[in-house]
Amino acid sequence: MDTLRRLPALRVLGQLPVPVVAVTEEGTVLYANDAMAEMLGLARDRLESMNFRDVFETPLGSASAVVDLQRHANTLVELSHADGSVVRAVMSRSALQRADDDIALVTFHDLTEQLWSRGH
Image 1 (cartoon, rainbow, N blue to C red):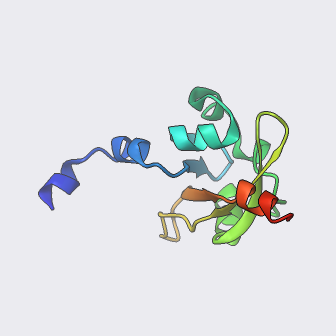
Image 2: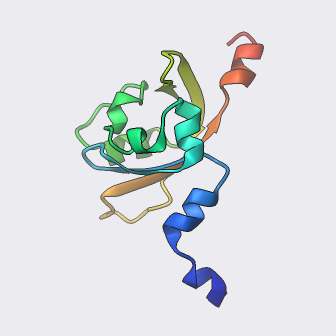
Image 3: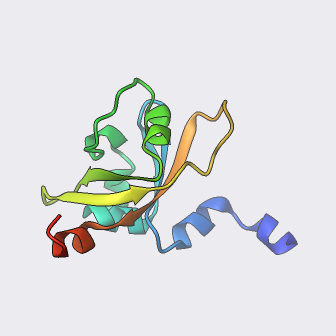
């Protein structure tokens, strides 16, 4: 357990094979791992210089990206790929769950190919 406590969080997030993104209330992308950038066809540094609203195609209803991401947790959402296509993925709940958290940290499960092969 001590070994786990000593691991730097960003290093762990960077090693995960699933797409991960951290977003502020304003929608600023604070962090994206390589899997997230690859899913969207972007360089990681490019994605980290963007506002998440620029790639999140599912309509957002409030001024807070964190609130909107929580609202869409565990649902199928649409994201913009760099080539102009739509990526359809199930988005997790934020790993940060306290009421005063001003950052959402979410993962995605890309279902685009699976849905496309079924004609959806």
